[in-house]
Figure (tube, each protein chain N blue to C red):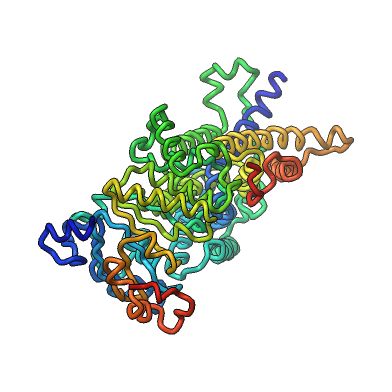
Length: 308
Length: 265
């Protein structure tokens, strides 16, 4: 746990933790609103945005890519809302239509464009590149206070930390209206709450979290973290406040344990190579959900008769 | 009491309330979910201090009338005023009890938290829940006989208990106008009695109560006014005048089979 850890493992782990929590937080509300698949949708629709950004700028620099991804996510969110309201189609189907269509469009665009010179492929989009987000200038824990070394931090880290801060702020400030409108939209409307704006705001925040996390860790973690930690957390408690806490814990656990297991697990088992951290983190979140489903104290759904 | 007041005003019993006095006045309200309107060109003026049953056959637009008046459903056309002002400016005086089936009772929250939602206006975005809020919520739970269930997850309640919690949340709003969507649907006899007792207390304290109601047999016992609807408004007024066999026949058509028409005035 010395210099090697700080330079090779600390930053990918921190990025993984922040990305996981940033997705899990809005995931709690999306899950309770029956919109859990929106994380899946967003991480697919960003592909055409990224390809377009590449076609326009000709580079794979982070900011144009993220802007393109963000724009594509916003277009998708608006399309989903429009299809849902105008076509009176249930949200799941509306998302399905939009994200497959846009992902397919992205694949076509990718084929038409000359991306052979750059690292832009479907595999990268799926698994991200968590292991490569290392901090080479770090020489040990003391580097954390060394401005010189801090400047060489992978730029994904401050980006995802900022994003996480924004997601936390959004959730904390709008906690009460979010909870109210998620539980009882009709009642929330009679209080004069801007229910539609809240719903759209939640999806936009989810999109921001997804795009920032996608940039750092790939879509497989994004998809898993929107659903698995909140779903597992729901089985641990009957209070939304505690559910949020559990989901944050599960997201962080998946990120840390997943990263460690992917890096060292195969070696412990006598293997030669580390395996994909993104894949391991997502898998672990699924395992946690499975365990919660088997042993969670509140896995019995209501409808059970009151005992008094 | 209602009739007496009306006479003092120099009006005939059952005469229309002026819209500027009415806690809920609706003009030309039309709502459509698809091609066919669910509510068509409905006028309604509810009398202050009255307890009105909105009745009509299934799919007649009873719930839609309430929801569109409150802006939960967007109407195609129509105006809604409360005490002569736009309803939006009077929301703090209006409490609403949705249909029990309209929410997910698996939602991870406790009975007390649901009642506290009725205090949203006091609490605001970030206000802390203080002792007085908790006391207020508990006293509302007591009024519906649910004080022993404050810490229960809402999914563990029976249907009648859930309905009482919804009513407690409305009480916490401290409103002057109470709109209830089928508050007695699928509840046990004890709950029905408790809910009606609370609603009559509200009326006695000067509040106006409007409830979508489905049981024609109890209209006369529970309510003093009725509003009959079948997409269009059929009849409205004091129970003694509007709850007649002829009006029921117009609202329900041939479907009126086992109603106690004999007991109707």
